[in-house]
Length: 261
Length: 273
Image (cartoon, rainbow over all chains, first blue to last red; front, side, top):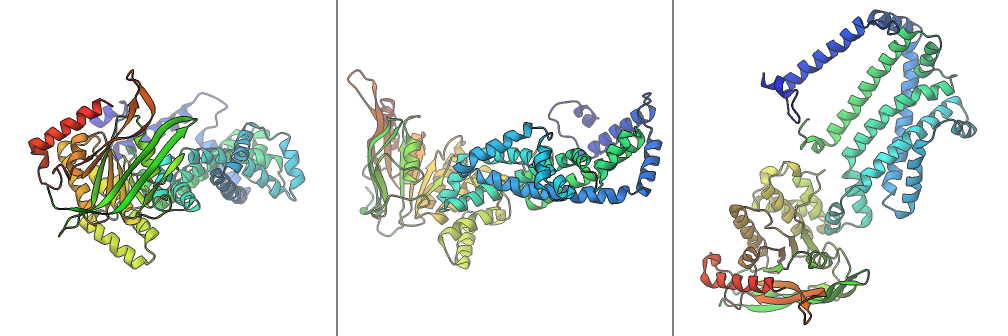
């Protein structure tokens, strides 16, 4: 009973069991709203699952693999590039460059696509470039802020332990912020899926769920659109969980002080 | 007075001045710490470094630690004709920083490895300190899982393992209850007396606690003009030798009337700064 009251009070920690009940209840509510919604444009669950079944036999699986592979490549590349750039901000020379790159997140892809097309040698490469650029500008912004927020005391501690400045960077910036790097990666990897549709729409020759989604949307097959969206959501959640798990394994200290674990 | 002699100079602050944007913060600060030798026992040195807030204690602290260079003058240790380098003097900051991404054992091994090339020797040294400071069962924990006292001990060990017998402690008595205060004082004396050359400088506002652990007190302040206005630039205005006053190395010294009288004297001087 107390736990039920705590659900509506600020900063209360509730038991795992209560959380399970809460999530189940809210999911059921969501399904109920979906099933009983009077909106004619919202396809019913049955229609969506029927579309999912049909799409699967039309090659949704292979399209998913294509998109997943592209996204994975883009995440890996943008993570490496962004981390290197963010870590490079310890050197004053790189700070204005990173600050400039960070500002590029306000730009639309329109127009830039042309330049990337000139640089790329294939459709896959073009999509990869676009995706890496789209994710990296956000990733580098987040990670550069993590590096900038490291308190002076952490650097001093390393220096008092006779570490040279490169070792200080490795210990304090790279190792010391690994948990935060995983968190930034997690948020930006999710962004990759969001950008995927747009990017795959620009170069459709290789296919992918993004291209499939745009085709279905063009013909107003809403149930198919929802089916693909649902698939992307499940895949994204899996990816999110995997990165979270990796963070837990590599940085077990990160969650020790949290009130809500 | 306890029988003692002074040995070589261990730490020398030689005419250190510091300016920020042309504004003097420290002005010709000079002081030195000598090895206190007592026949038949290992005695380290403890200096209490007192002064009002904003007087420049932290700035001098950072210069002595080799973290910041002074505008002029220099700090030398062990008579070596070279300014102190970061790492030679251990620093235990107020919030006892440790590498949060490393376990207690890993934090200490890292520190020991910085000074000791032989990893077996470094490991043995760490295990010895962990036992000595009652932290053996905490070796696999992360710093966030330690209590305040355990964290303090871990931070002290880390710095001792790496430094050349010198330890600067910033406000170690801040916010402690009576029991913890007594424990911290005992800990400081224990660390100091682990080696003849161990030298601890305690930066604090707590005059009584500082006087109870220290053999010398440095009082930092500013000079005043004829109208009583503070002149810019702080320096050490008073040095108290507690050994000469027979206020050192005596158990329960804080209960002695002469100790209370001394604390009163320092407090009066402190108020006049």
